Amino acid sequence: MPQRYHLACYVSEDIFEQFQAHAKSRHMTVTGLLRKLVTSELDGATLLPPAETERNLLFIARALDGLLEAHPDKTLRNRIVAAWNEEISEGFSHEL
Image 1 (cartoon, rainbow, N blue to C red):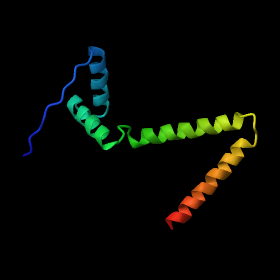
Image 2: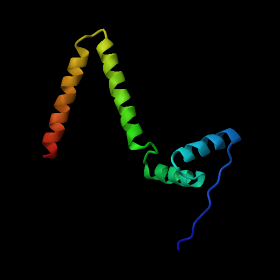
Image 3: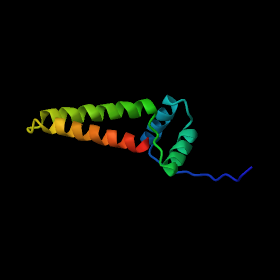
């Protein structure tokens, strides 16, 4: 069995309680979530569950669409959507 090393840090009681509640909400121990946080950070991954990531992306898309719709240049949204569609088409044709 490979040797394992101990990682520790000190936090305030408030931070510990919040982190512990967060771990429990994921059905994990504090140690398990801390390990996942460290390994995910090293792997460049996110701790957000896929559903939360999708909700965040949907919010961003809707918010941006709303801002474009409210922009004084009423042609801006359509030009951006057209440019996006063109880039998507070009990207797919390059992959085929």
